[in-house]
Every structure is written in structure tokens, then in C-alpha cells.
Length: 131
Image (cartoon, rainbow, N blue to C red):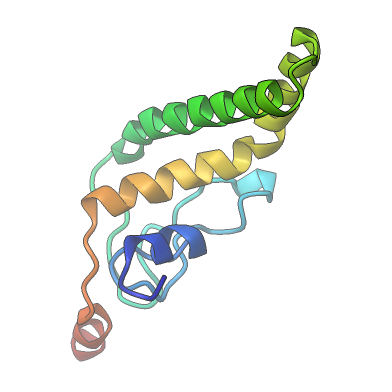
């Protein structure tokens, strides 16, 4: 997991273009600014807002992450505690979904951005030349 891989950008919430600058205004659990993306990267100047409404497509990624969370928790509880009652499984899924929703929201945006914004190892140097 080195700089230059999409996984690095996603797990560290870094700019998809240079992998140096921050992608979000704050951490996922600062609820006032959860998921707010910086318009431009502070290091390379990359425009993170490719077009108006660009991050609406991240809703599909968020849905997939939510389904993966639900299936993982449901399968895990069914596998490791087969005699657990369904209402308790539902409560565990609901509490997990509520607790992890800010993180899933932020993850969906950074995943979506990494699909469309490619890493450029020369992005920082090019930005320095232009400044």
C-alpha cells in the first residue's frame, strides 16, 4: 500500500491526483462537515469538483457499501452464533449502520473520485511550475 495506488488514496483520504493533499475538509466523524470535499487540492491544485452534482453518483457506491456491511454482519452473526435471534441480528445491523454511516459516506465519495481521477506522479511538480 504505497503512494501511487488507489488503495493508498482511499484509506488515507488523500487527493486522488497527487496522494499528498487532503481530500475532505475534516474527518468523517466531525458531523457538521462530514463528506465535504475540498474544491481544489491544497498541494497539487487538482479540481475535485469535476462537474456540478458529480458526487451524486457516489450514492450507488454508498448503497453497495451499505449492502456489504449488512451482508457481512448478518452472515457473521449467523455463522458464529447460529442460535442468535433475528431481532438481535437486526439490532446489531442497525446500530452498526448508524455508527458507521459517516465513514461509509466519506468512503463512497473518495472511492467514486478515484474511479474518475487518475494518479499523476508529476502533479506536484507541475503545480509548482505553474505557481
